[in-house]
Length: 284
Image (cartoon, rainbow, N blue to C red; front, top):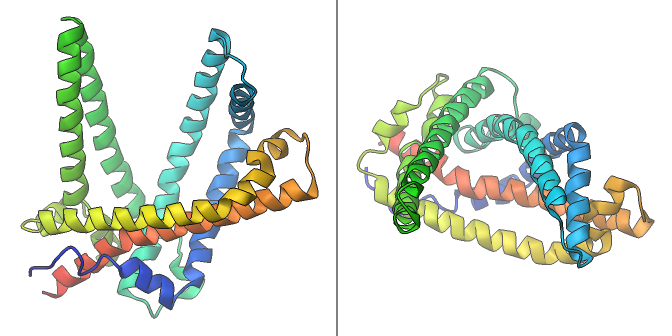
């Protein structure tokens, strides 16, 4: 079956129009994961916000502060990355169900079961491959640096473009892994590789268009959220307990709600099209 880049790219908008409450359900998942992340890395968030406040005040950060920043950032990443995988393992199956079985919309298509566990395994496996690619790229550039700056720069450029090409190929070839895993109730990674054969360029074009649409939504929501962010002061006062007023609380709540809705909308815009493609290819 042949399809064009625009055949499924608006699937996320269609679902949002038919089931707008889905944004709230997905936003709830993001809210819970975000709250857990902040709770587990609270002190590190405070340190990061303090660094931002130092920069905004026009002060020049010293080496000790920079090292403290790196340590705090590393601790946040160590907490946020595993939890982001958990969020993906819950949200992506919900999106798959919203496309393939729209009639079963209880709890916003959210479940906690074998589909989510299988999805977690798939997402973890694909993430580890990408991490391995990054480590290999870093090692190649590091070895090239031993031969001199000019050679290292040239190697770095070649590695960068190689990584971009690999990311595009890898992302497209395994873009149907989660839809297949959820729809067929089994871990299916290489099945995506086979199913996407002969459809690389339409899928890449669709991903590109979905990215543009997602960027547009992100830009619009950020414009709407700017007054709330300005009122809340970026949430620094709430984290530190300093300068908290009713106005800053309202601004913070508005910023958080809009951010959660934007994250939910982007998940639907970016991933629902691939579920729709899986359905079309499966029916052909």
